[in-house]
Length: 348
Image (cartoon, rainbow, N blue to C red):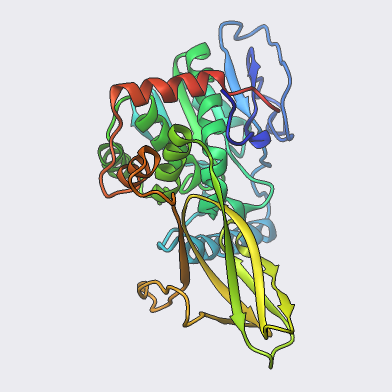
């Protein structure tokens, strides 16, 4: 049984203890190795990729931190379709979702390590990205979620105690990972787990990514060819954004002068994808392709559904059920997912 997508950004490494009395946060490096200390020999913390810095110490640094927080919050709001605010300058924040499961923001100071140790944290699971925009990308989350939850599942089984899951702000990827773990492993219906999560922490986990990742595990990650076309001879460049690359990237279309249209052939995993064309730099929808309903800001996108060609197949039935409004898993499906998580290779 192979893992759908390896996640090098979240490889867990065991630590005997985090010694946190120096001037810098000990996890201000990309990956941590084994650290030993004589003062807390019984403490065992698992850390998956740690990235952070020291607290701001001057007015200028504070101003820059506030500006960065504002930019980050604006990016989250645009990308995730919800008004979300993150204030890095206010320090680490978190909420207990369950007695042994915490979702929060990134660690910033040595005192944060001590604080988590004092409340019984044995596993620190970091999901910060090299590019923060990836934290908002539903397709990227879908592809990486099985490997992430596999590492989380193994770390919790090995370590026990309280687990702290964080990304940068603790509003997107971290709560989604916690939610998937509750759904796949702990027996919650997705709607019940989501309701509990939201009652504890204001955040915006991408439910569509969790639903799709669940169906991927149970049916296999099957791709199908899709062709996109833009008709027009009076333009010099045509690109497409969204789909499986996110809104931060663009894919150029090729021009067929004999047919008089621009085209893109692409293989996509099953699921629904939103996208938009960029024609000579202008973002537009193709009126000859499916268009979404306006969102709260009045914006619309094109979309495409990539589905099994046989709607009566078992795979199609699983996809329809798990991507519906209130999906749940049978006992056998949870067993299959648990076996998948156990078999998923530990790649760094």
